[in-house]
Image 1 (cartoon, rainbow, N blue to C red):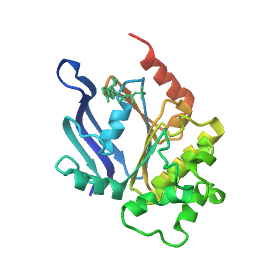
Image 2: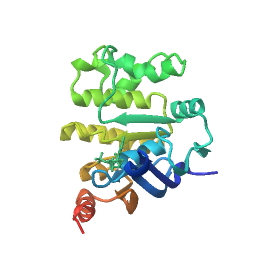
Image 3: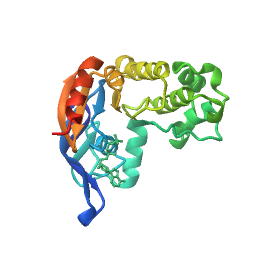
Length: 244
Ligand SMILES: Nc1ncnc2c1ncn2[C@@H]1O[C@H](COP(=O)(O)OP(=O)(O)OP(=O)(O)O)[C@@H](O)[C@H]1O
């Protein structure tokens, strides 16, 4: 039995065709242990978002394989892939992607509705309370602050208790106090619910909340640090960003 929630093996991915082809990931092999929180860092254009999208089954790599919970994604058709993502994967993006005409509670309920499930009594209230928004259930996104909207997005990603949560710059648009709340929430998913969290970030302070920090450069993993404090992470990042 695997203890890896997500595994990438020899993953190569890129964009465009022919002479305009850009290689974004080159033969990346990495596994994410169930119940851990990993930060993915690296200079702009190093392939972080592409890694996240391939690992989450949102993009199909040009070569290599991706497994989520032991299921290889490559052979799955689009419908089967959609079902697997719906059942096992949650996403939080920098742009909160909330539906502006729905209330916070209705936004949180969306993944359940898409899966044809009715929320259990109290389930939505509990999900909003878990992100500190019990009093905001009836507010629409336009009536919430950026941090509150991001917390609604996290509650929505958590409602189906996905085995893996992918977050792309989830604190990029937030002030530092709100960022800390969001990062503590993500940390709690791993610690209290054994969910696996993979988060792209540019911020060493955010990465210091993770159990592990992967550093990417030019589409390859160039460093793999165990939990470290922000100063150590910042120093490793600075080394990558100095032109050779
Ligand atoms: N849709 C696209 N079409 C063409 N090239 C793309 C596309 N998306 C990304 N790329 C290229 O692929 C490479 C990796 O991009 P990716 O977005 O994965 O990097 P990143 O590390 O997440 O960058 P950033 O920190 O700036 O968001 C870059 O060279 C980028 O220009």
